[in-house]
Image (cartoon, rainbow, N blue to C red; front, side, top):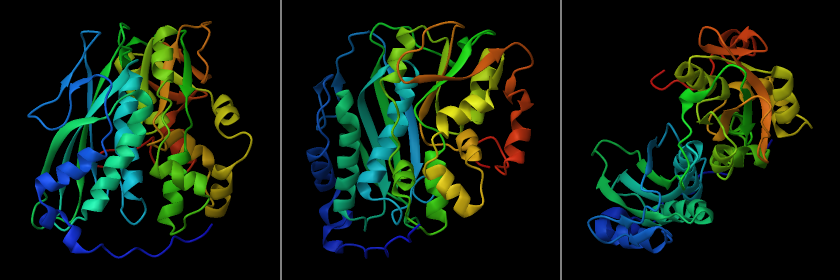
Length: 344
Protein backbone atom coordinates (compact mmCIF):
# COMPACT_ATOMS: atom_id res chain seq x y z
CA UNK A 1 0.00 0.00 0.00
CA UNK A 2 1.23 3.51 -0.80
CA UNK A 3 0.73 6.66 1.20
CA UNK A 4 -1.45 9.45 -0.20
CA UNK A 5 0.02 12.51 -1.79
CA UNK A 6 0.26 15.63 0.40
CA UNK A 7 -2.76 17.90 0.49
CA UNK A 8 -3.01 20.45 -2.29
CA UNK A 9 -3.11 23.98 -0.81
CA UNK A 10 -6.43 25.81 -0.94
CA UNK A 11 -7.00 27.68 -4.15
CA UNK A 12 -6.81 31.43 -4.58
CA UNK A 13 -9.61 33.01 -2.53
CA UNK A 14 -10.35 35.30 -5.50
CA UNK A 15 -12.27 32.31 -6.85
CA UNK A 16 -14.13 31.69 -3.58
CA UNK A 17 -17.85 31.69 -2.87
CA UNK A 18 -17.42 34.95 -0.92
CA UNK A 19 -16.14 36.78 -4.00
CA UNK A 20 -18.24 35.13 -6.72
CA UNK A 21 -21.47 35.30 -4.71
CA UNK A 22 -24.53 33.06 -4.52
CA UNK A 23 -25.75 33.59 -8.06
CA UNK A 24 -22.29 33.33 -9.52
CA UNK A 25 -21.93 29.96 -7.81
CA UNK A 26 -25.34 28.84 -9.02
CA UNK A 27 -24.52 29.82 -12.60
CA UNK A 28 -21.28 27.84 -12.54
CA UNK A 29 -22.87 24.79 -10.94
CA UNK A 30 -25.88 24.81 -13.28
CA UNK A 31 -23.52 24.92 -16.25
CA UNK A 32 -22.23 21.51 -15.16
CA UNK A 33 -25.53 20.01 -14.03
CA UNK A 34 -26.56 18.22 -17.22
CA UNK A 35 -30.20 17.76 -18.19
CA UNK A 36 -32.96 15.53 -16.87
CA UNK A 37 -35.12 13.73 -19.41
CA UNK A 38 -38.21 14.21 -17.21
CA UNK A 39 -37.75 17.96 -16.72
CA UNK A 40 -40.06 20.45 -18.42
CA UNK A 41 -38.53 23.28 -16.40
CA UNK A 42 -35.02 22.92 -15.01
CA UNK A 43 -32.83 25.17 -12.85
CA UNK A 44 -33.36 28.92 -12.94
CA UNK A 45 -36.94 29.38 -11.77
CA UNK A 46 -38.48 29.20 -8.31
CA UNK A 47 -39.05 25.48 -8.81
CA UNK A 48 -38.46 22.76 -11.37
CA UNK A 49 -41.29 21.03 -13.22
CA UNK A 50 -41.04 17.31 -13.95
CA UNK A 51 -43.19 15.00 -16.04
CA UNK A 52 -44.56 12.11 -13.97
CA UNK A 53 -45.85 9.46 -16.40
CA UNK A 54 -46.54 6.95 -13.61
CA UNK A 55 -48.57 9.43 -11.56
CA UNK A 56 -46.49 8.64 -8.46
CA UNK A 57 -43.13 10.02 -7.33
CA UNK A 58 -40.45 8.14 -5.41
CA UNK A 59 -38.70 10.60 -3.08
CA UNK A 60 -35.70 10.17 -0.79
CA UNK A 61 -33.15 12.40 0.97
CA UNK A 62 -29.62 11.96 2.30
CA UNK A 63 -27.38 14.46 4.08
CA UNK A 64 -23.60 14.32 3.74
CA UNK A 65 -21.48 16.21 6.27
CA UNK A 66 -17.80 16.91 5.66
CA UNK A 67 -15.66 15.10 8.18
CA UNK A 68 -18.28 12.41 8.74
CA UNK A 69 -19.29 11.24 5.26
CA UNK A 70 -16.36 12.57 3.21
CA UNK A 71 -13.03 14.31 3.60
CA UNK A 72 -11.61 16.71 1.05
CA UNK A 73 -8.09 15.41 1.68
CA UNK A 74 -9.25 11.86 0.81
CA UNK A 75 -11.65 12.57 -2.05
CA UNK A 76 -11.75 14.93 -5.00
CA UNK A 77 -14.71 17.21 -5.55
CA UNK A 78 -15.88 14.91 -8.35
CA UNK A 79 -15.66 11.94 -5.96
CA UNK A 80 -17.88 13.74 -3.45
CA UNK A 81 -20.42 14.51 -6.17
CA UNK A 82 -20.53 10.91 -7.32
CA UNK A 83 -20.93 9.66 -3.75
CA UNK A 84 -23.66 12.15 -2.82
CA UNK A 85 -25.67 11.26 -5.90
CA UNK A 86 -25.16 7.51 -5.57
CA UNK A 87 -26.43 7.40 -1.99
CA UNK A 88 -29.78 8.77 -3.16
CA UNK A 89 -30.06 7.13 -6.56
CA UNK A 90 -29.59 3.72 -4.91
CA UNK A 91 -32.55 4.35 -2.59
CA UNK A 92 -34.78 4.98 -5.60
CA UNK A 93 -33.57 1.75 -7.21
CA UNK A 94 -34.26 -0.12 -3.96
CA UNK A 95 -37.94 0.78 -4.32
CA UNK A 96 -37.97 -0.63 -7.84
CA UNK A 97 -37.84 2.81 -9.44
CA UNK A 98 -35.63 4.77 -11.82
CA UNK A 99 -34.29 8.15 -10.69
CA UNK A 100 -35.43 11.19 -12.67
CA UNK A 101 -33.96 14.20 -10.87
CA UNK A 102 -31.96 15.49 -7.91
CA UNK A 103 -32.46 18.57 -5.72
CA UNK A 104 -29.39 19.75 -3.83
CA UNK A 105 -29.10 21.91 -0.72
CA UNK A 106 -25.59 23.20 -0.02
CA UNK A 107 -24.15 24.92 3.04
CA UNK A 108 -20.48 25.89 2.78
CA UNK A 109 -17.94 28.34 4.23
CA UNK A 110 -17.55 31.58 2.29
CA UNK A 111 -13.94 30.76 1.40
CA UNK A 112 -14.89 27.52 -0.38
CA UNK A 113 -13.35 27.58 -3.89
CA UNK A 114 -16.03 27.76 -6.55
CA UNK A 115 -14.00 25.34 -8.66
CA UNK A 116 -14.49 22.73 -5.90
CA UNK A 117 -18.27 23.20 -6.08
CA UNK A 118 -18.13 22.92 -9.86
CA UNK A 119 -16.31 19.61 -9.40
CA UNK A 120 -19.05 18.34 -7.08
CA UNK A 121 -21.65 19.33 -9.68
CA UNK A 122 -19.70 17.55 -12.42
CA UNK A 123 -19.49 14.38 -10.32
CA UNK A 124 -23.23 14.44 -9.66
CA UNK A 125 -23.96 14.99 -13.32
CA UNK A 126 -21.76 12.07 -14.35
CA UNK A 127 -23.42 9.74 -11.82
CA UNK A 128 -26.92 10.77 -12.93
CA UNK A 129 -26.39 10.83 -16.69
CA UNK A 130 -26.72 7.08 -17.41
CA UNK A 131 -30.16 7.16 -15.76
CA UNK A 132 -31.35 10.21 -17.70
CA UNK A 133 -31.47 12.18 -14.44
CA UNK A 134 -29.82 15.46 -13.42
CA UNK A 135 -29.81 18.16 -10.76
CA UNK A 136 -32.86 20.31 -11.47
CA UNK A 137 -32.72 22.73 -8.54
CA UNK A 138 -31.72 23.38 -4.95
CA UNK A 139 -30.39 26.06 -2.64
CA UNK A 140 -27.07 27.44 -1.44
CA UNK A 141 -26.42 29.06 1.95
CA UNK A 142 -23.42 30.17 3.97
CA UNK A 143 -22.33 27.78 6.71
CA UNK A 144 -22.36 28.96 10.31
CA UNK A 145 -19.55 31.46 10.97
CA UNK A 146 -17.74 29.02 13.24
CA UNK A 147 -18.10 26.04 10.88
CA UNK A 148 -15.53 25.01 8.27
CA UNK A 149 -17.55 22.00 7.09
CA UNK A 150 -19.45 21.60 3.82
CA UNK A 151 -22.92 20.06 4.14
CA UNK A 152 -24.76 18.57 1.17
CA UNK A 153 -28.43 17.63 1.38
CA UNK A 154 -29.55 15.71 -1.70
CA UNK A 155 -33.11 14.73 -2.56
CA UNK A 156 -33.70 12.22 -5.35
CA UNK A 157 -36.96 11.85 -7.21
CA UNK A 158 -37.86 8.78 -9.23
CA UNK A 159 -40.44 7.01 -11.35
CA UNK A 160 -41.84 3.51 -10.75
CA UNK A 161 -42.78 2.97 -14.38
CA UNK A 162 -46.09 1.37 -13.45
CA UNK A 163 -44.55 -1.09 -10.98
CA UNK A 164 -45.73 -1.55 -7.43
CA UNK A 165 -43.07 -0.21 -5.02
CA UNK A 166 -41.01 -2.94 -3.38
CA UNK A 167 -41.10 -2.32 0.37
CA UNK A 168 -39.00 -3.65 3.22
CA UNK A 169 -42.07 -5.26 4.75
CA UNK A 170 -42.92 -7.93 2.18
CA UNK A 171 -40.48 -10.76 2.99
CA UNK A 172 -42.12 -14.08 3.90
CA UNK A 173 -40.82 -17.39 5.31
CA UNK A 174 -39.61 -19.55 2.45
CA UNK A 175 -38.29 -16.61 0.42
CA UNK A 176 -34.66 -16.58 -0.69
CA UNK A 177 -32.32 -13.73 0.21
CA UNK A 178 -30.29 -12.27 -2.65
CA UNK A 179 -27.77 -9.50 -3.26
CA UNK A 180 -26.91 -7.44 -6.34
CA UNK A 181 -23.65 -5.51 -6.29
CA UNK A 182 -20.55 -5.85 -4.16
CA UNK A 183 -20.15 -5.72 -0.39
CA UNK A 184 -17.25 -4.74 1.85
CA UNK A 185 -15.29 -2.75 -0.70
CA UNK A 186 -16.10 0.72 0.66
CA UNK A 187 -15.31 -0.37 4.23
CA UNK A 188 -12.03 -1.84 3.01
CA UNK A 189 -11.15 1.41 1.23
CA UNK A 190 -12.00 3.40 4.35
CA UNK A 191 -9.71 1.18 6.43
CA UNK A 192 -6.91 1.86 3.95
CA UNK A 193 -7.41 5.63 4.04
CA UNK A 194 -7.58 5.68 7.82
CA UNK A 195 -4.15 4.06 7.93
CA UNK A 196 -2.76 6.82 5.74
CA UNK A 197 -2.43 4.79 2.54
CA UNK A 198 -4.00 5.13 -0.91
CA UNK A 199 -3.76 1.64 -2.40
CA UNK A 200 -5.01 -0.83 -3.50
CA UNK A 201 -6.64 1.77 -5.73
CA UNK A 202 -9.68 -0.44 -6.44
CA UNK A 203 -10.65 -0.50 -2.77
CA UNK A 204 -10.01 3.21 -2.20
CA UNK A 205 -11.97 4.11 -5.33
CA UNK A 206 -14.88 1.99 -4.10
CA UNK A 207 -15.04 4.14 -0.97
CA UNK A 208 -14.73 7.39 -2.86
CA UNK A 209 -17.19 6.47 -5.62
CA UNK A 210 -19.67 3.67 -4.86
CA UNK A 211 -21.01 1.68 -7.81
CA UNK A 212 -24.64 0.83 -7.03
CA UNK A 213 -26.35 -1.63 -9.40
CA UNK A 214 -29.15 0.77 -10.33
CA UNK A 215 -30.75 -1.40 -13.01
CA UNK A 216 -30.99 -4.34 -10.60
CA UNK A 217 -33.73 -2.59 -8.59
CA UNK A 218 -36.36 -2.32 -11.33
CA UNK A 219 -35.31 -5.77 -12.59
CA UNK A 220 -35.97 -7.25 -9.14
CA UNK A 221 -39.37 -5.57 -8.99
CA UNK A 222 -40.28 -6.99 -12.40
CA UNK A 223 -39.12 -10.44 -11.25
CA UNK A 224 -41.45 -10.43 -8.24
CA UNK A 225 -39.13 -9.37 -5.40
CA UNK A 226 -41.11 -9.42 -2.15
CA UNK A 227 -38.92 -6.97 -0.20
CA UNK A 228 -35.87 -4.84 -0.94
CA UNK A 229 -33.52 -2.22 0.50
CA UNK A 230 -30.13 -0.77 -0.32
CA UNK A 231 -27.09 -1.70 1.78
CA UNK A 232 -25.89 1.63 3.15
CA UNK A 233 -25.30 0.74 6.81
CA UNK A 234 -23.97 -2.81 6.34
CA UNK A 235 -25.45 -6.12 5.21
CA UNK A 236 -26.36 -7.36 8.69
CA UNK A 237 -27.72 -3.99 9.80
CA UNK A 238 -29.84 -3.48 6.70
CA UNK A 239 -31.01 -7.10 6.71
CA UNK A 240 -32.13 -6.31 10.25
CA UNK A 241 -34.28 -3.43 8.98
CA UNK A 242 -35.87 -5.76 6.45
CA UNK A 243 -36.40 -8.51 9.06
CA UNK A 244 -38.03 -6.11 11.52
CA UNK A 245 -40.31 -4.55 8.92
CA UNK A 246 -41.38 -7.98 7.63
CA UNK A 247 -41.59 -9.74 11.01
CA UNK A 248 -39.27 -12.58 9.93
CA UNK A 249 -35.86 -14.10 10.51
CA UNK A 250 -33.32 -13.35 7.78
CA UNK A 251 -30.58 -15.98 7.73
CA UNK A 252 -27.41 -15.13 5.81
CA UNK A 253 -25.55 -18.17 4.47
CA UNK A 254 -21.91 -17.60 5.41
CA UNK A 255 -20.54 -20.04 2.81
CA UNK A 256 -22.66 -18.54 0.02
CA UNK A 257 -21.56 -15.02 0.95
CA UNK A 258 -17.89 -15.99 0.98
CA UNK A 259 -18.29 -17.78 -2.35
CA UNK A 260 -19.95 -14.81 -4.06
CA UNK A 261 -18.10 -11.90 -2.44
CA UNK A 262 -14.62 -13.17 -1.56
CA UNK A 263 -13.78 -15.65 -4.31
CA UNK A 264 -11.49 -15.45 -6.14
CA UNK A 265 -9.24 -13.54 -3.66
CA UNK A 266 -8.71 -9.86 -4.39
CA UNK A 267 -8.09 -6.46 -2.74
CA UNK A 268 -10.18 -7.23 0.35
CA UNK A 269 -8.01 -10.20 1.26
CA UNK A 270 -4.84 -8.25 0.44
CA UNK A 271 -5.76 -5.37 2.72
CA UNK A 272 -7.10 -7.64 5.45
CA UNK A 273 -3.82 -9.57 5.52
CA UNK A 274 -1.84 -6.32 5.81
CA UNK A 275 -4.05 -4.98 8.61
CA UNK A 276 -4.63 -8.24 10.47
CA UNK A 277 -8.38 -8.08 9.80
CA UNK A 278 -10.98 -10.55 8.52
CA UNK A 279 -12.40 -9.48 5.13
CA UNK A 280 -15.71 -11.16 5.98
CA UNK A 281 -16.22 -8.50 8.66
CA UNK A 282 -16.24 -5.82 5.95
CA UNK A 283 -18.61 -7.86 3.78
CA UNK A 284 -21.07 -8.40 6.64
CA UNK A 285 -20.92 -5.05 8.41
CA UNK A 286 -19.35 -2.51 6.03
CA UNK A 287 -21.61 0.19 4.63
CA UNK A 288 -21.72 2.63 1.71
CA UNK A 289 -21.32 0.14 -1.12
CA UNK A 290 -25.02 0.65 -1.86
CA UNK A 291 -25.55 -2.89 -3.08
CA UNK A 292 -29.18 -4.01 -3.18
CA UNK A 293 -30.60 -6.64 -0.83
CA UNK A 294 -33.88 -8.35 -1.73
CA UNK A 295 -36.04 -11.37 -1.05
CA UNK A 296 -37.71 -13.43 -3.76
CA UNK A 297 -40.24 -16.27 -3.60
CA UNK A 298 -38.53 -19.64 -3.17
CA UNK A 299 -37.82 -21.24 -6.54
CA UNK A 300 -38.14 -17.97 -8.46
CA UNK A 301 -35.63 -17.27 -11.22
CA UNK A 302 -33.41 -14.40 -10.14
CA UNK A 303 -32.69 -11.56 -12.59
CA UNK A 304 -29.15 -11.23 -13.97
CA UNK A 305 -26.73 -9.83 -11.41
CA UNK A 306 -28.57 -11.21 -8.39
CA UNK A 307 -27.06 -14.02 -6.32
CA UNK A 308 -28.63 -16.03 -3.48
CA UNK A 309 -26.95 -15.49 -0.10
CA UNK A 310 -29.52 -16.78 2.38
CA UNK A 311 -33.15 -17.41 3.17
CA UNK A 312 -36.12 -16.11 5.14
CA UNK A 313 -37.51 -18.09 8.06
CA UNK A 314 -40.29 -17.71 10.60
CA UNK A 315 -39.49 -16.77 14.19
CA UNK A 316 -38.64 -13.80 16.35
CA UNK A 317 -37.64 -11.05 13.88
CA UNK A 318 -33.89 -10.70 13.52
CA UNK A 319 -30.80 -11.70 11.56
CA UNK A 320 -28.67 -14.80 11.82
CA UNK A 321 -25.55 -15.96 9.97
CA UNK A 322 -25.85 -19.68 9.26
CA UNK A 323 -28.04 -19.91 12.35
CA UNK A 324 -25.83 -17.84 14.68
CA UNK A 325 -27.03 -14.44 16.01
CA UNK A 326 -25.68 -11.66 13.81
CA UNK A 327 -24.34 -9.61 16.72
CA UNK A 328 -22.29 -12.55 17.99
CA UNK A 329 -20.85 -13.20 14.55
CA UNK A 330 -19.92 -9.53 14.11
CA UNK A 331 -18.19 -9.51 17.49
CA UNK A 332 -16.30 -12.71 16.73
CA UNK A 333 -15.03 -11.19 13.47
CA UNK A 334 -13.77 -8.11 15.29
CA UNK A 335 -16.40 -5.76 13.82
CA UNK A 336 -17.92 -4.88 17.19
CA UNK A 337 -21.37 -4.22 15.73
CA UNK A 338 -23.52 -5.27 12.81
CA UNK A 339 -23.15 -2.03 10.87
CA UNK A 340 -23.12 1.75 11.00
CA UNK A 341 -25.02 3.35 13.87
CA UNK A 342 -26.05 6.98 13.47
CA UNK A 343 -25.29 9.02 16.62
CA UNK A 344 -23.35 5.99 17.89
